Image (cartoon, rainbow, N blue to C red; front, side, top):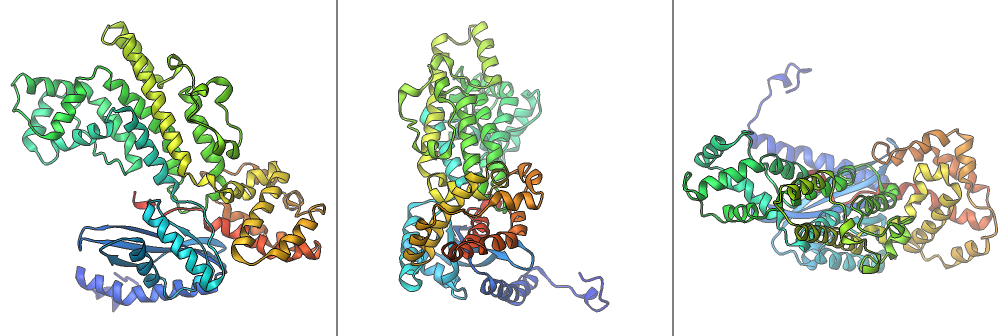
Length: 510
C-alpha cells in the first residue's frame, strides 16, 4: 500500500476496517481542511442533492461546497458530508441541511445549487428567509439544474406524441435480462448477434446508444417476434414483450426511432458539456440560445422568418405557443436517416402519405412541447444568468461595450442581494455619464484579445480570467469615489459568477 516505507509496506486490512479508517480517521481530517478553506474564502456555494440509498433504504442528502481557492487560483468543488432522512418535506430538508453545514459560516453563502422539485423550492424559500433574518443577506437565485430540466423537457416532448419510445427501449432490454434461454433463442434468429442496450430515461447520456442499438437490431427483433407468434419459439406473456410486440405492429416506428436519435444527438453535446465541474455559467445563456436555434432550424419547426432568435432576452419572451409562427407540417424535417427511410417505405408502399403527414405533425409537436417546457424552467430566464456573459472571454474581446454593460447590470444584482445599498446605487446612477471600467484597455494592454476570442466553452475554463484580477482592481481604483465603492464588489462578481456556474452535485453520476 505504501512502497516508500518498509513498515507501512507490510500494512494490510480488510474491507470493513479500511472503511472505518477512512470514515472515522481520514474523513474528519479532510473535512477540517475543507472547513478551514471555507473560513478563508470570501464566499462559497452550497450544492445539495438527495437520493435513495439502496443499502439502508433511506434518502441520502449529500452536501458539496464550491469555493475559490486563493492559493491554487481556481474553483474547487469538495464533498462536505451526508445525512440520512426518511421523510423529505421542505422542513425535513431544511433541518438536515442545517445539521450538515453547522461548521460553516452561512453569512458567506453566495448561492444554493439544487435540482428543481417543488419541495426544493419550498426549502430554498425558507432558507432565504432565514438568511435574510439572521445575516441580512440573500443568496443569488440562478434557477435549478439545467441538465435535469433539459432531460425532463425531452421526455415531455416524446410523451406528447404518444409514441412511448422510452417504454419500448426499456422493455426491449428487460425481455432478455437474466434469461439465458430467451437470449439463446434470439441469437439463433439474429443476424447481428447483438443484444439491446440498457436504457434508463433519467440517464440522459444513454438515449443515443440505446436507440441506435434498437435500430441496428430492428430486423432481428421483427424476426424474433414473428417466430414467437408463429409458435416456433416459446410464448412470452410478460408486459415488456407486449410493449415490444405493439411497437413492431407500427409501420412508422422505425422512422420514429431515427427521429428520436436525431433529436437526441442535437441535445447530446450540450448535456455532455455541462456535465462538468468547470465554471461554465458565463457560457450558459449563449449555449442555450444556440441549442434552441439548432432544434428550430435543423427540424424546420418555425417559418423561415421566425427561425433565427438573436438574443437570450428575445428567447425568454418568444411565444412558442403561437401557431402562426409554425412552419407548414409538410416542411418539417425529421433528420437525414428518417427522411431516407420515409422515401424508401413510400416507394415500397409500406406507408401512405397520410402516415407521413401525421408523423411530421407529431415531430413538430414533440419539439415545440420540449422547447416550451425547457424555457418555462430554464435558468436563462434569470437576468443574472443572462448577464453572466460579461465574463465570457469571447464577448470581452469582441464586444467590450456589451461586456461592460452586462457587468454593470450584474453588479446591481450582486450589491442588492448582499447589502443594504441605496446610497451606492444612487451614487452609481449619478455617475452614469462617467467613464466606466475599461475592459478593452485591460485586454489590449495584456495582448489577450487573441486568446480570449478563441476561447471554447467546451474546452476552456473561465478561471483564467482571474489572472487579470489585479489589473481590474488597479484600473477600477482610479475611478471616482462613487465607483470606487463598487470596485470591490465587481471583483467579487468576476470570481463568484465563476464559482456558481455548475448545478447539482449528482451530475457526475448521472
